[in-house]
Length: 156
Image (cartoon, rainbow, N blue to C red):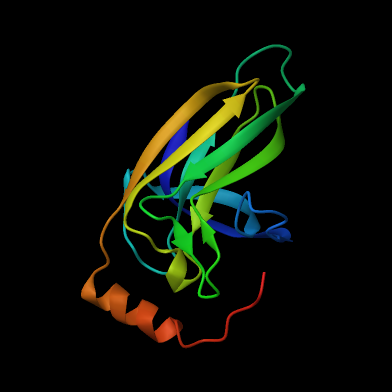
């Protein structure tokens, strides 16, 4: 339905990294795409993702899906050494109702240039795939990220 860079407001909270399957995730509400693009700037505060609808019958019925983000290169590496090569989250969506899955650069170590693959799986089959290209950081974004690295980190 839609993909690219979005704005949102904070949702009901943060889902901590409950396992090695994914980093912590923020719930967001009122997602509004501001730019339909596959090229994502490597800049703190950038949020990007996909909005999709699964059209089967009956409309409104619950459906289990697995949302996957495959990170480029060696993956995302926290300052404490923990590494994620992908994020995998099982969710329930409603048939025929728009759903959203995205990622936001909240911390400097999350910004990894390269191809980020977003996938949605249902009943063992990949039903959606979208690749984003996170661009190398500009000098300004790199300086901002370096300054933010000095801030204390919450332990997740």
